[in-house]
Length: 491
Image (cartoon, rainbow, N blue to C red):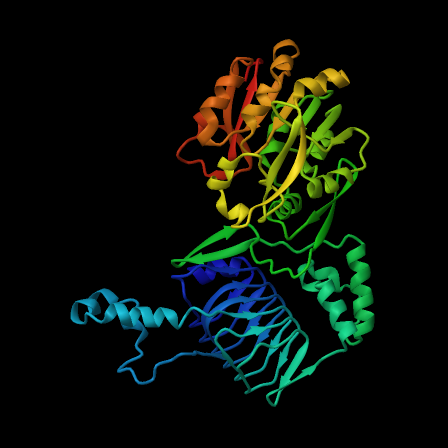
């Protein structure tokens, strides 16, 4: 049943192929796996071929366009050949029964697990000949060729040929650097359109031109196998060694998205697949033509551009972090005004804690660091930023928003406190705000002073917006940050 479902996803699995379904396996489309192979690989990239009788144990990832020929196997290190038995089944499926008979089982299982700690990584566009054996923990770089019936005990650098236990470079350093910079395998298949594969120089020149002509980055859905079940997931296999920039056009304006960043990658994936973020779905339902929008926490400007595309009259975008603001400031759209400021409860300078994981998540509040420690890492980086209040900004510029979006990673209460006068005398007709559960009550208490109606909104799997109170058992909820809408109009 699993293999039939995979075949529907253009993944061809021949007879007697066994997956280690106790671990997560992610496979991109257009993969072929031939007979009698054992697959214990976390990530398998698109357009990869795995031959017959291949034993791939403890492999972390196999890149795209890689060929692994018949009878390739893994050399396990630290094997203790002096033990009575190396039986895997006693250490896994029947360990509970065995434990009753042998009180040494904990030690045996621990030794077995220690043998599995070092993972092999196989790059993109790799060719591995028949009968090759690869030592556990080895890293094989992009573009490597390994001669048949050889044993690989050490890492192999990109674009090398491994033959007779020696490493020879396939091309000169200049060409290798160009190939690693291009990373052509990260683009749609038609990146190879009209490319002369037999001339490396001509191929590089043509691929570079194709990329410049807005060639699309290849972001297929991943197929997650676990416990013999198949689940379709957003793209996950993206072992990019450099920043891959995808160019998109929103509201007739160019925006560059760095595919290495998970949030920008998701923006791009949504565009390719006609999906919408929760912000876009809220626009579809509540934004009106001629709205003046304050995008507070605008990040790189994706949502600001979407407001213009959806009919907003003007957008004022606020982003305090310098390296993020640099991207925002590149937007050439006269209806978007950008400000390197945070809106807060006073005019001052503050330190903001920077996310090391992705371009979102930067926060003024210490509490957010404890809620999302992985986003900030052990050595927290900070940057000094300037703040003002919404009241001061509106009064100074004689501008009053009709639609406000607030996404400020824990500083929502301070933004509202700095907007009291405007909310009282010139209230917007609509406010959208992201509020985490830990601080919801105190933020909600302040906002409710100015608005009659509010709802918590979510996305369901059909890419539709729903109110939390209307969710049924049949609805599959798409995980998003907790988002609320406030208005004095009927909802």
